[in-house]
Image (cartoon, rainbow, N blue to C red):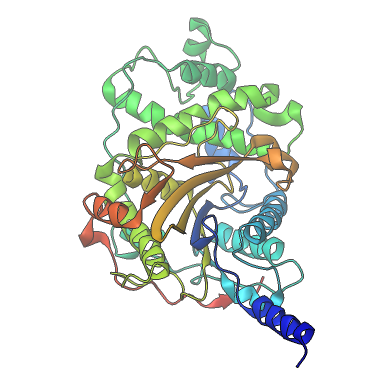
Length: 416
């Protein structure tokens, strides 16, 4: 055989070998994301006592994913497709779509979000998702509810600086005025006031924070749904105003969802299965069932804002960023990567948050439509990558072992 043919044969053999993963190629990735843009969970008639004017009508029933929300989730799926391909997790080829798995909570808005995400992520492939029937609670996302209990909140401790500036602004927008005569008139009309000098005890303040968190989110949803500017928050809801108001939702979750008294029992089951998925990728025997097989390195979990807050509390991380003032926007995600660096398996954590305008336009492919931040874990405060051997025992000390299932529920495959 000639020397030229030997060289050609050797080169062909080398090209046929699988490429070794670089230090930036994740061995596994778990993306926990909130569902897409939905309508408020209360109908306009139920919300009527909170405002001087009628709340905006929605094209869908309360708490349901909108057509606009589905379009944004499909766009998010297209963005994810680009990112997974760039990071070497999936080639985008249909015969390799088993490398990606989507698991959605059973609520209708999550199932619809999973379908839209699968369409965008799959491209020309018929990517599916998995979910329990709509009437069946999934313990991955609602551990207490699935076990016959109720998801609870940590006791709300109101901020020392009272009232928060955003709370005063929200009440003035709701009532259309802010002076004492306005408040007195609203009280006489039976309005539900957030700030009432006649009722200013600890219980009233705690209730006000909870209500404000929900009401501010409703106004944010009007903005990201794409309603005309003159109709968002009765004409007061520009991007800057919505950014200030949504801080009340962030505050509510910081006080009620993130503290360990609630985060541990509510979030430990989900986090345990996420960590088991990373352990499996590292070749470490997992303590509970992973979310997918080792042949499926990318798992997307279509969850809720409460899940993200619970995980943030267990992980002791904060991803607030002025570029996206909403800490838990529709489609917002917490991303876990297992990466092998110089022979050591490390965990990298990041937040991927669609911007308010990206959601409003339902176009999340542009680079500036998402705010991406690398998060540092407390066991490794000086580095973006923390060894799995250090992360796992630290998390075990914070998680509730009695609120963890060994197995995940069998979720049927659903075609979008």
